[in-house]
Image 1 (cartoon, one colour):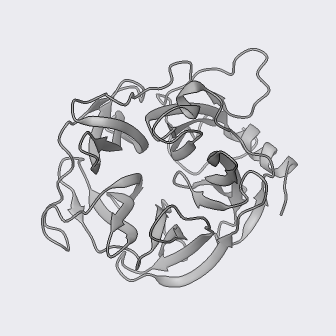
Image 2 (tube, one colour):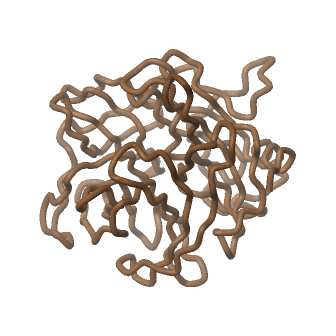
Length: 327
Protein backbone atom coordinates (compact mmCIF):
# COMPACT_ATOMS: atom_id res chain seq x y z
CA UNK A 1 0.00 0.00 0.00
CA UNK A 2 1.13 3.53 -0.78
CA UNK A 3 -0.62 5.08 2.24
CA UNK A 4 -0.98 3.53 5.67
CA UNK A 5 -4.26 3.15 7.55
CA UNK A 6 -4.33 3.30 11.35
CA UNK A 7 -6.87 0.64 12.15
CA UNK A 8 -7.80 -3.01 12.12
CA UNK A 9 -7.28 -5.74 9.58
CA UNK A 10 -10.78 -6.39 8.28
CA UNK A 11 -10.39 -9.11 5.69
CA UNK A 12 -14.10 -9.97 5.86
CA UNK A 13 -15.54 -6.58 4.90
CA UNK A 14 -17.85 -6.58 1.89
CA UNK A 15 -15.94 -6.35 -1.36
CA UNK A 16 -16.35 -6.52 -5.14
CA UNK A 17 -13.51 -5.83 -7.55
CA UNK A 18 -13.82 -2.77 -9.75
CA UNK A 19 -15.84 -3.67 -12.85
CA UNK A 20 -13.92 -3.94 -16.10
CA UNK A 21 -13.74 -0.60 -17.84
CA UNK A 22 -14.84 1.38 -14.78
CA UNK A 23 -12.91 4.63 -14.44
CA UNK A 24 -14.55 5.81 -11.23
CA UNK A 25 -12.69 5.98 -7.92
CA UNK A 26 -15.77 4.68 -6.10
CA UNK A 27 -18.00 1.97 -7.58
CA UNK A 28 -21.36 0.58 -6.52
CA UNK A 29 -22.13 -2.90 -5.24
CA UNK A 30 -23.90 -5.11 -7.75
CA UNK A 31 -26.19 -6.16 -4.88
CA UNK A 32 -27.60 -2.70 -4.16
CA UNK A 33 -29.72 -1.89 -2.37
CA UNK A 34 -28.52 -4.22 0.38
CA UNK A 35 -31.39 -3.21 2.70
CA UNK A 36 -34.76 -2.43 1.17
CA UNK A 37 -37.39 -0.08 2.51
CA UNK A 38 -39.63 -2.91 3.80
CA UNK A 39 -36.84 -5.02 5.29
CA UNK A 40 -38.71 -5.28 8.61
CA UNK A 41 -42.48 -5.35 9.17
CA UNK A 42 -42.64 -1.92 10.82
CA UNK A 43 -40.56 0.04 8.31
CA UNK A 44 -41.58 2.43 5.59
CA UNK A 45 -37.97 3.23 4.71
CA UNK A 46 -34.50 2.21 5.97
CA UNK A 47 -31.58 4.45 5.02
CA UNK A 48 -28.66 6.64 6.26
CA UNK A 49 -27.37 3.99 8.67
CA UNK A 50 -24.11 3.12 10.45
CA UNK A 51 -22.11 -0.14 10.38
CA UNK A 52 -19.11 -1.30 12.46
CA UNK A 53 -17.11 -4.54 12.85
CA UNK A 54 -18.21 -6.58 15.87
CA UNK A 55 -17.46 -10.10 17.11
CA UNK A 56 -16.12 -11.41 13.82
CA UNK A 57 -19.09 -10.00 11.92
CA UNK A 58 -20.85 -6.65 11.85
CA UNK A 59 -23.36 -4.64 13.82
CA UNK A 60 -25.31 -1.66 12.66
CA UNK A 61 -27.56 1.10 13.90
CA UNK A 62 -30.19 1.64 11.23
CA UNK A 63 -32.52 4.54 10.64
CA UNK A 64 -35.90 2.89 10.17
CA UNK A 65 -38.73 5.34 9.59
CA UNK A 66 -41.93 3.61 10.64
CA UNK A 67 -45.23 3.29 8.82
CA UNK A 68 -46.74 5.87 11.15
CA UNK A 69 -43.99 8.32 10.18
CA UNK A 70 -41.76 8.07 13.25
CA UNK A 71 -37.97 8.23 12.82
CA UNK A 72 -36.39 5.46 14.92
CA UNK A 73 -33.07 3.67 15.46
CA UNK A 74 -32.87 -0.12 15.22
CA UNK A 75 -30.04 -2.62 15.79
CA UNK A 76 -28.85 -4.78 12.90
CA UNK A 77 -26.61 -7.86 12.73
CA UNK A 78 -24.74 -9.37 9.79
CA UNK A 79 -22.04 -11.97 9.24
CA UNK A 80 -20.90 -10.50 5.92
CA UNK A 81 -22.01 -6.84 5.99
CA UNK A 82 -24.48 -7.44 3.15
CA UNK A 83 -27.25 -9.71 4.43
CA UNK A 84 -28.80 -8.03 7.47
CA UNK A 85 -31.12 -9.07 10.27
CA UNK A 86 -32.63 -5.91 11.74
CA UNK A 87 -34.63 -5.86 14.97
CA UNK A 88 -38.22 -4.89 14.36
CA UNK A 89 -38.35 -3.17 17.77
CA UNK A 90 -36.49 0.15 18.03
CA UNK A 91 -33.58 0.71 20.41
CA UNK A 92 -34.61 1.54 23.98
CA UNK A 93 -32.14 3.53 26.06
CA UNK A 94 -31.61 2.60 29.71
CA UNK A 95 -29.90 4.16 32.71
CA UNK A 96 -28.84 7.20 30.73
CA UNK A 97 -28.64 10.85 31.60
CA UNK A 98 -32.36 11.23 30.86
CA UNK A 99 -33.58 7.85 32.08
CA UNK A 100 -35.10 5.19 29.90
CA UNK A 101 -36.21 5.76 26.30
CA UNK A 102 -35.74 9.54 26.26
CA UNK A 103 -35.39 10.05 22.53
CA UNK A 104 -37.64 12.36 20.55
CA UNK A 105 -36.60 10.91 17.23
CA UNK A 106 -33.60 9.23 15.73
CA UNK A 107 -32.12 9.70 12.32
CA UNK A 108 -28.87 9.57 10.38
CA UNK A 109 -26.83 7.69 13.05
CA UNK A 110 -23.09 7.17 13.11
CA UNK A 111 -21.25 4.67 15.32
CA UNK A 112 -17.70 5.18 16.61
CA UNK A 113 -15.64 2.71 18.65
CA UNK A 114 -13.44 4.46 21.21
CA UNK A 115 -12.29 3.67 24.76
CA UNK A 116 -14.03 0.29 24.81
CA UNK A 117 -17.45 1.70 23.89
CA UNK A 118 -19.45 1.99 20.71
CA UNK A 119 -20.76 5.55 20.73
CA UNK A 120 -23.87 6.30 18.72
CA UNK A 121 -24.46 9.86 17.55
CA UNK A 122 -27.64 10.86 15.76
CA UNK A 123 -29.99 13.76 15.16
CA UNK A 124 -32.21 14.02 18.25
CA UNK A 125 -34.65 16.79 19.27
CA UNK A 126 -34.11 19.29 22.09
CA UNK A 127 -36.22 22.35 21.29
CA UNK A 128 -34.83 21.85 17.82
CA UNK A 129 -32.59 19.30 16.12
CA UNK A 130 -29.53 18.48 18.18
CA UNK A 131 -26.87 15.76 18.38
CA UNK A 132 -27.92 12.83 20.55
CA UNK A 133 -25.20 10.67 22.12
CA UNK A 134 -25.41 7.15 23.54
CA UNK A 135 -23.09 4.20 23.99
CA UNK A 136 -23.22 0.42 24.06
CA UNK A 137 -20.73 -2.37 24.56
CA UNK A 138 -22.85 -5.23 23.25
CA UNK A 139 -25.54 -3.69 20.99
CA UNK A 140 -28.12 -4.99 23.43
CA UNK A 141 -28.14 -2.32 26.10
CA UNK A 142 -27.75 1.30 25.10
CA UNK A 143 -27.05 4.12 27.56
CA UNK A 144 -28.07 7.63 26.61
CA UNK A 145 -25.75 10.52 27.45
CA UNK A 146 -26.29 14.26 27.40
CA UNK A 147 -26.97 15.78 24.00
CA UNK A 148 -23.71 17.13 22.63
CA UNK A 149 -24.80 20.61 21.56
CA UNK A 150 -27.52 23.19 21.79
CA UNK A 151 -30.01 23.27 18.92
CA UNK A 152 -29.83 23.54 16.05
CA UNK A 153 -27.22 21.03 14.93
CA UNK A 154 -26.92 17.87 12.83
CA UNK A 155 -24.41 15.40 11.40
CA UNK A 156 -22.47 14.79 14.60
CA UNK A 157 -19.54 12.52 13.76
CA UNK A 158 -17.18 11.43 16.55
CA UNK A 159 -13.52 10.76 15.80
CA UNK A 160 -12.33 7.20 16.60
CA UNK A 161 -9.53 8.34 18.92
CA UNK A 162 -8.77 11.24 21.19
CA UNK A 163 -6.97 14.17 19.62
CA UNK A 164 -4.54 16.04 21.84
CA UNK A 165 -6.10 14.21 24.80
CA UNK A 166 -9.69 15.25 23.99
CA UNK A 167 -12.70 13.61 22.42
CA UNK A 168 -13.38 15.26 19.08
CA UNK A 169 -16.48 15.65 16.94
CA UNK A 170 -17.49 17.18 13.64
CA UNK A 171 -20.94 18.74 13.31
CA UNK A 172 -23.01 21.06 11.14
CA UNK A 173 -24.96 23.89 12.79
CA UNK A 174 -28.34 24.20 11.10
CA UNK A 175 -31.87 25.48 11.60
CA UNK A 176 -35.24 23.95 12.43
CA UNK A 177 -36.11 22.70 8.96
CA UNK A 178 -34.42 21.64 5.72
CA UNK A 179 -31.42 23.85 6.21
CA UNK A 180 -30.45 25.88 3.16
CA UNK A 181 -26.93 26.45 4.53
CA UNK A 182 -24.28 24.49 6.40
CA UNK A 183 -20.56 24.41 7.20
CA UNK A 184 -18.64 21.70 9.06
CA UNK A 185 -17.28 22.61 12.50
CA UNK A 186 -14.89 20.83 14.86
CA UNK A 187 -15.41 20.62 18.65
CA UNK A 188 -13.57 19.05 21.61
CA UNK A 189 -14.61 17.55 24.95
CA UNK A 190 -12.67 16.26 27.96
CA UNK A 191 -15.51 13.97 29.08
CA UNK A 192 -18.10 13.51 26.29
CA UNK A 193 -20.38 15.92 28.18
CA UNK A 194 -18.90 19.42 27.95
CA UNK A 195 -18.11 20.51 24.40
CA UNK A 196 -16.11 23.57 23.38
CA UNK A 197 -13.03 24.82 21.52
CA UNK A 198 -15.20 25.07 18.42
CA UNK A 199 -13.32 25.57 15.15
CA UNK A 200 -14.58 26.16 11.63
CA UNK A 201 -13.36 23.33 9.39
CA UNK A 202 -15.01 23.34 5.96
CA UNK A 203 -17.38 25.57 4.01
CA UNK A 204 -19.50 24.66 0.98
CA UNK A 205 -17.25 24.46 -2.04
CA UNK A 206 -19.40 25.75 -4.85
CA UNK A 207 -20.89 23.74 -7.67
CA UNK A 208 -22.18 20.34 -6.50
CA UNK A 209 -21.56 21.29 -2.84
CA UNK A 210 -22.47 24.95 -3.19
CA UNK A 211 -25.34 25.12 -0.69
CA UNK A 212 -24.25 23.00 2.29
CA UNK A 213 -22.00 20.15 3.36
CA UNK A 214 -21.93 17.69 6.25
CA UNK A 215 -19.55 15.07 7.61
CA UNK A 216 -20.35 11.50 6.56
CA UNK A 217 -18.69 8.35 7.93
CA UNK A 218 -16.36 8.32 10.92
CA UNK A 219 -13.00 9.70 9.67
CA UNK A 220 -10.19 7.21 9.04
CA UNK A 221 -6.65 8.04 10.12
CA UNK A 222 -4.09 7.56 7.34
CA UNK A 223 -0.45 8.47 6.86
CA UNK A 224 -1.72 11.61 5.04
CA UNK A 225 -4.11 12.68 7.82
CA UNK A 226 -7.78 12.12 8.54
CA UNK A 227 -9.64 10.83 5.51
CA UNK A 228 -13.13 12.37 5.53
CA UNK A 229 -15.95 11.37 3.22
CA UNK A 230 -18.75 13.94 3.30
CA UNK A 231 -21.97 14.90 1.54
CA UNK A 232 -22.51 18.07 -0.41
CA UNK A 233 -25.77 19.61 -1.57
CA UNK A 234 -26.74 21.82 -4.48
CA UNK A 235 -30.17 23.38 -4.94
CA UNK A 236 -31.38 22.82 -8.49
CA UNK A 237 -34.55 23.91 -10.26
CA UNK A 238 -35.93 20.48 -9.30
CA UNK A 239 -34.88 20.54 -5.64
CA UNK A 240 -31.89 19.47 -3.56
CA UNK A 241 -29.33 16.97 -4.88
CA UNK A 242 -26.99 15.19 -2.44
CA UNK A 243 -23.61 13.91 -3.65
CA UNK A 244 -20.54 12.32 -2.05
CA UNK A 245 -17.15 14.02 -1.74
CA UNK A 246 -13.86 13.57 0.11
CA UNK A 247 -11.12 15.55 1.87
CA UNK A 248 -8.07 15.02 4.07
CA UNK A 249 -7.85 16.81 7.41
CA UNK A 250 -4.72 17.47 9.46
CA UNK A 251 -3.98 14.69 11.93
CA UNK A 252 -3.22 17.01 14.87
CA UNK A 253 -5.53 19.88 13.90
CA UNK A 254 -8.55 18.31 12.15
CA UNK A 255 -10.16 21.70 11.59
CA UNK A 256 -7.39 22.32 9.05
CA UNK A 257 -8.18 20.92 5.61
CA UNK A 258 -5.00 19.71 3.90
CA UNK A 259 -6.57 18.51 0.65
CA UNK A 260 -10.09 18.60 -0.77
CA UNK A 261 -11.22 17.07 -4.03
CA UNK A 262 -13.06 19.46 -6.31
CA UNK A 263 -15.05 16.81 -8.21
CA UNK A 264 -17.56 14.65 -6.36
CA UNK A 265 -16.96 10.92 -5.83
CA UNK A 266 -20.52 9.77 -6.50
CA UNK A 267 -23.76 11.38 -7.62
CA UNK A 268 -27.30 9.98 -7.75
CA UNK A 269 -27.76 8.16 -11.04
CA UNK A 270 -29.13 4.69 -10.28
CA UNK A 271 -32.88 4.29 -9.89
CA UNK A 272 -32.58 3.51 -6.15
CA UNK A 273 -30.73 6.83 -5.68
CA UNK A 274 -32.95 8.96 -7.90
CA UNK A 275 -36.39 7.59 -7.01
CA UNK A 276 -37.74 7.29 -3.47
CA UNK A 277 -39.09 9.27 -0.54
CA UNK A 278 -36.55 12.04 -1.26
CA UNK A 279 -35.25 11.82 -4.84
CA UNK A 280 -31.64 12.39 -5.88
CA UNK A 281 -29.80 11.56 -2.65
CA UNK A 282 -26.48 9.81 -2.01
CA UNK A 283 -25.82 10.14 1.73
CA UNK A 284 -22.73 8.34 3.17
CA UNK A 285 -22.87 7.32 6.85
CA UNK A 286 -20.29 4.54 7.41
CA UNK A 287 -16.99 3.37 5.99
CA UNK A 288 -15.15 0.11 6.72
CA UNK A 289 -11.46 -0.06 5.75
CA UNK A 290 -9.06 -2.99 5.85
CA UNK A 291 -5.70 -1.70 7.09
CA UNK A 292 -3.85 -4.55 5.40
CA UNK A 293 -5.19 -4.30 1.83
CA UNK A 294 -6.59 -0.77 1.71
CA UNK A 295 -9.97 -2.01 0.57
CA UNK A 296 -12.92 0.05 1.80
CA UNK A 297 -16.70 -0.32 1.82
CA UNK A 298 -18.88 2.79 2.10
CA UNK A 299 -22.47 2.50 3.33
CA UNK A 300 -24.82 5.17 2.08
CA UNK A 301 -28.50 5.97 1.91
CA UNK A 302 -30.20 6.07 -1.47
CA UNK A 303 -33.07 8.53 -2.02
CA UNK A 304 -33.83 8.50 1.73
CA UNK A 305 -35.35 5.06 1.15
CA UNK A 306 -32.77 2.22 1.07
CA UNK A 307 -29.26 1.29 2.27
CA UNK A 308 -26.54 0.81 -0.34
CA UNK A 309 -22.82 -0.06 -0.48
CA UNK A 310 -20.00 1.27 -2.63
CA UNK A 311 -16.32 0.29 -2.79
CA UNK A 312 -12.96 1.95 -3.21
CA UNK A 313 -9.24 1.51 -2.62
CA UNK A 314 -7.84 3.94 -0.06
CA UNK A 315 -4.69 4.51 -2.15
CA UNK A 316 -6.74 5.47 -5.19
CA UNK A 317 -9.07 7.66 -3.15
CA UNK A 318 -6.24 9.64 -1.55
CA UNK A 319 -4.47 10.02 -4.91
CA UNK A 320 -7.76 11.30 -6.39
CA UNK A 321 -8.18 13.87 -3.62
CA UNK A 322 -4.63 15.16 -3.97
CA UNK A 323 -4.73 15.22 -7.77
CA UNK A 324 -7.93 17.26 -7.74
CA UNK A 325 -7.12 19.44 -4.73
CA UNK A 326 -8.94 22.78 -4.46
CA UNK A 327 -7.38 23.89 -1.15
